[in-house]
Image (cartoon, rainbow, N blue to C red; front, side, top):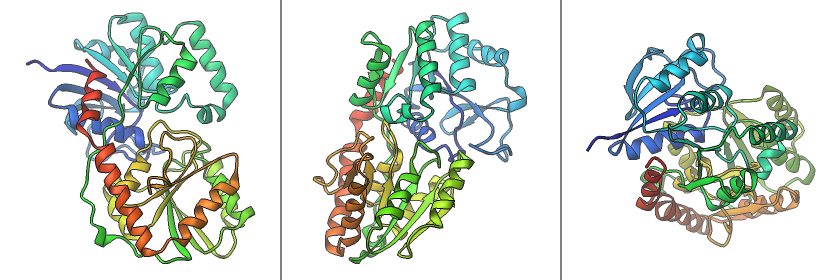
Length: 383
């Protein structure tokens, strides 16, 4: 049977990794559904925050890569006419946009579709950008954008891709009850967990990590401020992995690091390729610390569980009741003491209890994050 053709616009794709979850989400969809759909991906020829193009990749032509056809568009070849040509050069069954605010790789393609290809089915994934916490960052600019697009019905006749029931409710709240929304949780790829590779856990010490873009939205400074003011007990290591999307915010973090008490060591490590991630997490860290202002899913969280690492996450993700399930702790961003209490509990876990929690994380990942049901729901996005 002839495959349906799906055109995807996104700012960054493989082999890029610095933009984190959005790359993983689309890459996993393509990998899981490539037998059912023919994917055509238009993206930049650079990674997040990079000026140098990818090595050994020819730009501005269709290439067969990563179970798809990928068009790495260079900055000097980008134009509205080019986007119009790419949309119109073949008879696509659907267009998928992987961002709400990207001017070049979401808004411009949607504007061209609305004007020249109004019958092209279009799906937009806001990727948690409409959550209450996310809207607090640059709130005035975002509020003006949303009001303007609603006034001119810019998002009329599209389908929204929500990754959870909570995100569906959020989209309905912003764009109205008549908004067409389909739910499809991100697809995750299972990987074998080797418990013997886990780092030992002794009461009174713990190693934490953060993975994600270093930005105000990810809220690392909140955790550091709690460290400075409330001084959790024990020997604590906290390594931060991710691209510095906002240099001013990185400088703020570096200033905070200098003010930490002597029992807390924090290091900014920069971005880490996905292929190195799992082994490193298993071998060197106990817990993930993730004080984000809002997520619709978060590959970082499920990657932690897949590596046997419980998580300490804010109350702005879809993952709740973590302590009850032996998966970690939820803390309240309005109550810094709740974060410190969670950290102290994590630091005091002994080896036996930690092993039980670590195994719970892997079992939960395999049963609830990697499932055929999730893959099936993602097929419905494009049908």
